[in-house]
Every structure is written in C-alpha cells, then in structure tokens.
Image 1 (cartoon, helix red, strand yellow):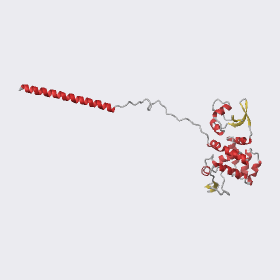
Image 2 (image 1 turned 30 degrees about the vertical axis):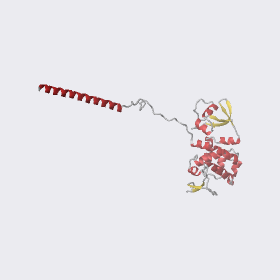
Image 3 (image 1 turned 180 degrees about the vertical axis):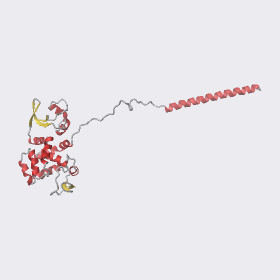
Image 4 (image 1 turned 135 degrees about the horizontal axis):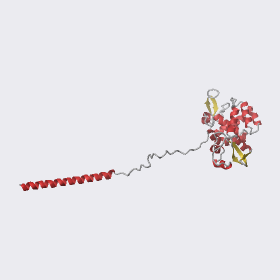
Length: 273
C-alpha cells in the first residue's frame, strides 16, 4: 500500500514539473515573438528640434518701387508717342505716373485710363468715377497703349494746347507750366509735381534718347559720354538698373564702383554712347 502511495506522489511531482516547463517555454516564445513584432528602427533625433539650429530665413530680394516699375513698362510707349506727336516722353510719363497713381488707381486698373481723360465727345466704352463732381464720365480703353495714343491726340487736336507745340521738344519745364496754363489740370502745383517727377526719376533721359542728345559727364578722371543720374535718397543700384534697363554689374563697372553703396549727390553714368 505504501509503495502505491509513493508511486502516485512521484507521478504527480513529475507531471507538475513538466507542466511548468511547458508553460515557461510557451511564455518565453510568446515574449520573443512580441518583441519581434513591435521592434522599430530608432528615430534620429539629432536633426529634430535641435536647440542650436536657427530658423532658415528666406533670401532678401531687392524690389523696385511702383514708379520704377511703371517707367519700365511704359517708357518705350512714351518715346514712340514723342516721335509721332512731338510731346516730350518725360512729360507723358510724368503725367501717367501722377494721374494713374503709378498704374494703381481705379481708372487705370479698371479702364486702362492713365491720364484721367473724361468722356467729352467720346463714343466708346466708359466708366464713371468721382472726380471734381460725383460719378463723372471717363474714357475706357482695351489696353493702356490706347490711353497713351488718346492722350497724344487729345493734346495735338485741341487748339488750347497749340502753344505747347511751339516749345522745344525737350523743354519739359515749359510743357509742365503750359499744361497748367491751358487748363489740363486745376491743381496750381501741377507743374511743380510734373517737374519733380521728371527730375527725381531722370525721365528727361527718354527725351534725349528720342532727340539723340547726349550728355558729357565726368566720372573720376575719365570722360564718359552718355546718360547720367544724380543719386537721390532711396536710390539703389538695383532700382537704377531696373529704371535704365541695365544691370547692377554694368553700373558698377562703368562707374568704377567696388561696392553696392551709393552716396546722395553722386553723379553716375547709367548709359554709355
């Protein structure tokens, strides 16, 4: 009897040990399997939110003024009108800049009317805009170039402007005062505004191009024949290169400049003969 009891106890002990080994083996396999499933590539944090990294700043791009952009767009048209109708290109450009707010005014944006010419005998498209009175009628064009042509015809075909055409073709000061005297504008400072624009932006250079006049200026010890520009407040080599259809490098080379800095009052050559 005792022998049977001993055998039963030994069998229970063996069975219990075998069960523990199998459970441990299964648990180990399960753990290894889980580790393989969730394993991921390590994230490289060295380039993320690095405290010493400064934010990347966009490159600074120099920009020209609205007036410079306007001149670049319409100077050729103004010169063509000067050749055909003998109106100084400098006057046409200055009037366009002033009357159209450098091409940004409502009449120029919505009607391509750069000179504020009202309807009068006009039979074409029109736009209504508050001026001296409410909702006055102004001419509307399909393209700005037609506004320039109509401006030339407007001055050429009206008798009250005939004295202007007796002036020298490049006498922009005489033209500026004559427009006011003939009633083109009611603003008593209109001539001064035109002359200021012409001299500030050297618009008379376009008169010189049409007439063939050249100016002799002294650059260091060298004599250079060409168009010149007196540096004013706000001028940069970039804005001048845009205005005179050249490049910053060419301006520096022509004027023997070693840097991009300019001094107010300097006389620069902007075009060579």
